[in-house]
Image: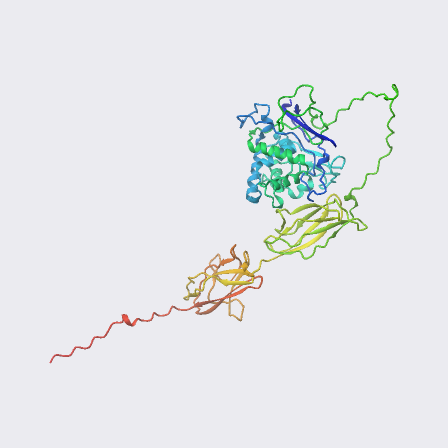
Length: 601
């Protein structure tokens, strides 16, 4: 038997002269084994990215969303466990497993990207708007939804047009993409934003732990600080580019910040207001309200939600046939009939993506950066037709390939960017990691099989041009002993601190002979055996490096310790091994000779 919950509906319609918002109270049923979100999520006109939208792929593909607003008041006192006891409790509460996923994602983002200041309440607000908290918390013990939550196919028919990018792996659709899972990621975004949030070795958009962590990283890209309102707005709009979406998410964010409560999994209510729903025509909400319903539905005020039984798709009710009016000027006559519909199947208009023949390098050369630095140049790709004409409004995916820890700004390995009017897509800035060497960035067209375009990039070692000792203390040792004073040096580059610079230390035969010496001072390896060359040494954040302790064998003499770095810095340090000098007697402490006594006469 389906469980019944109190629900609210907000539907909006915008005309050229007036905008009206209606909030009505509804009650509906949720079948216990729904296998898809059959709410017909459709993109409203205000969900279509404007011309000045940041040229990055949205998380949801600007799919439709739930528009219900928070209740005016949370239950007081708010229950912490058990079945909700007031009309708004199940709606305002968050299912236990879903809430746990949001809080774990917040904790991980605090560690990985502390400057983002991601609050778990933002994930809860987006989860509420995207899927009604995973359809009221219908998840298993591992956090995976019971039945997939899938939005409508994005085929351009009232939606964004996104052709298949995952061969139907996530959404079961090999023609077009659909938003998937409790956070409603489209497959092309999940390809780079997906995370393993529950540690099972998989990145599953249908798992609330994985999806919540992915949403957190998505919202924290580009170095946004979500404690700043402007950055917060940018992050939310990047998830779904709609001002109404932004306002709805912010309303739930504020509601959850004021306090919420945990409810058992599967007992939450599913919102019913949708951004693609037609104007309801009801009266305005009560004065002074910011959203929410005043009580249970009055019979006859609105119809229940769509039938969500397994395998039974949502079918809109067939409208009744209106009476045929008479012509005002000629009573009793019928109005002119509409022309007959055209026969045959119309040829679909090619999309910009359909016209792309190839990708061209838009002038990117010399992709080289020092480890840890930002590449000075950004990768630019131009989408062109077969005749070489520019193609705008095409989504291009940039993917970092190869064995490298380099990443785009925000720490991601993949970024999707839309070409501008000149057909050019500019990738986010590349940040070199600590791993040196070459790697590849590949540009491909999302939704079309054309050859990818590869860009070669190289990360070089950190360098220093000067090494100096931090003290002038003489470095001496007796044969078979150990040097008491440590060897510490500082690396600089053009006078500035050179941190994380690799340093090689070698005990050479002489100033003129750089070969490794086979006698004299030495370091010890992990087994205590003598070694006379050390690699893998690096300076710290202040450019300082303290070498391991030095020892000496029985060979006396003067020796050279040579330190070198990438960038040409070299420093020779003199080491002396000699027996300790005999102390020089102090004349003042030597015993005096007394004059011999004269024999008495």
